[in-house]
Length: 507
Ligand SMILES: NC(=O)C1=CN([C@@H]2O[C@H](COP(=O)(O)OP(=O)(O)OC[C@H]3O[C@@H](n4cnc5c(N)ncnc54)[C@H](O)[C@@H]3O)[C@@H](O)[C@H]2O)C=CC1
Ligand SMILES: O=C(O)[C@H](O)CS(=O)(=O)O
Image (cartoon, rainbow, N blue to C red):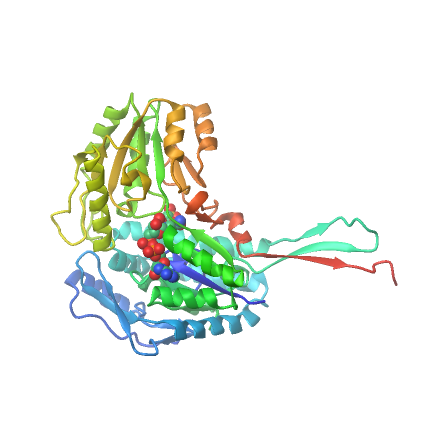
C-alpha cells in the first residue's frame, strides 16, 4: 500500500495535521539585519537548535540540491529572519521515496507504539510552546499570546489522534450465507497517528514553525523518513506530489483556487483528497441578541490574527432594529485595539502577512466605497507603515460588493442590514463558500432554525471562537472536502477493507 501523504498549508497549521527526525547539527545562521528584539528572539531560537532552515528528507536536514535559498521575512519590519532551502521536484521525489520506504516499518508498529511517539511529541511541543510561539510571531506577525495559544491548540490535535488511533475499530457483518464470515478492517489513519508517513510542504511565507516542529518530532522518536519537510517552489513541489503514484493522499489548506488545481491533478492517480479552503463567514446578529455577547463574539471571530483566518467573520449581517446600536458599540470596542509588533505587550493586531494582502484589502474597500459603502472606522494603512492596517468597519454594505462575495482576509468588518429571519438566511447562504457561520440571538428556537438552514460546515451560536480538536472542522460547497479533527477526521485517512472468509463449513 502506498503510504505517503502530502500536506500543503500554513506553517503552524501543519502541527494540526501530522507529527514531523534530526541529526542534531548546529543550526547555522541568521541575517545580520533583523531588529534588536527579533534578533534576540531569533538568536535564542538559533542557539537552542530551534531555527531549522534546511529541508528534512529521510531524517536528514539538507540544503536544496542546487543550493538555492529563499528569504523568510518578519512582516512587522520586513527584515530577513532566515534563508531557507528552496527546493523543487528532485528533492520532493526523494522525500516521497523516503516516506514510501519508512511506511513499511512505521505502519507495522501497533497503534499503541505510534501513540507513544506522538504523545512524546505532544509533550515536547507543549514544553517548547514559548519558542514555537515566538517563531510564529517572528515569521507570521501575530501577537505572541495568540501565537502560543495556536501552538497549544495545534498540539491538541496530536494528543487527540494519538489516542484516537487506538480506537480504529472494524466491523463484523452478519453473513447472508452460513459458510462465510464477513468483516471490515480499517487501515492507516491521521497522518502518523494511524500509520501514514508524510511529505509536508509548509507555506514559503511561514516555513520555520513547521521545521521546528519536525525537529521536536524527531526528538520524540518518530523514525527517519516517516516525516519529511520540503519547501520552496510551491507549484513544482505540488506538481511532483500530485503526479507520484506513491502518494496516496493529499490534504491541502489554502485558497480555493489552489485547492481546485490540486484536486484536478489528484485525479491522475485517483488520490484521496482533503481540502480546507476559503471561507466567507456570515455573522448574523438579531435584534433579540445579548449585545455584549454579540460584540464579544463578533470581535473574536472578525479580528483574530488580524482577520487572517478562514473562519473569520467576513460579513456581519445585523437586523435593522439593532443595527445602529451595534455599529456604535462595536466601533467603540474596535477602536481600542492596539496595532503593532506581535512581541509588544498589549498588541492585539499584528501586521498582514505581506504587501499583496494589504493591496487586496485596499481594492475591496475601494470597490465597496464605489458602490455606496461608508467608512465608519479606519479604512487606511496604519501609521506604523509596513503591512500594518487600521482595524476597519464599513457600513451600508450590499451583497453585490466584492467584500461580500469574497473573503477579505484582513481586519475589515463589513456591516450589512436585514429585516426578516428569511432574508438573513438568504444573504448568509448567497456565496460559493460554506466553511463557518455565526448567529447571535437569545431565542433558542430561532438559533436551531438558523443553524439548520445555514449551508456551512461549522456554526457558532452566541460564540465566535468555536474551533477545537474534538469537533469536525471543514466546509460545505467550495470551502473544501472532508473534515479535520474529531473522530470524523480519522475517516479521511482510513482505507476500508472488506474480507470474506469462505469455506467455513469444511474441517
Ligand atoms: N479551511 C481552512 O482550514 C483554512 C483555509 N485557509 C485559506 O487559505 C487562504 C489563505 O492562505 P494562502 O497561503 O494565501 O493560500 P494559498 O492557496 O495562496 O497558499 C496555500 C499553500 O498552497 C501552496 N501553493 C500555492 N500554489 C500552489 C501550487 N500551484 N501547487 C501546490 N501548492 C501551492 C502555498 O505555497 C501554500 O503553502 C484563504 O483563502 C483562507 O481562507 C487558511 C487557513 C485555514
Ligand atoms: O488556519 C486557520 O485559519 C485555522 O484553520 C482556523 S482555526 O482552526 O484556528 O479556527
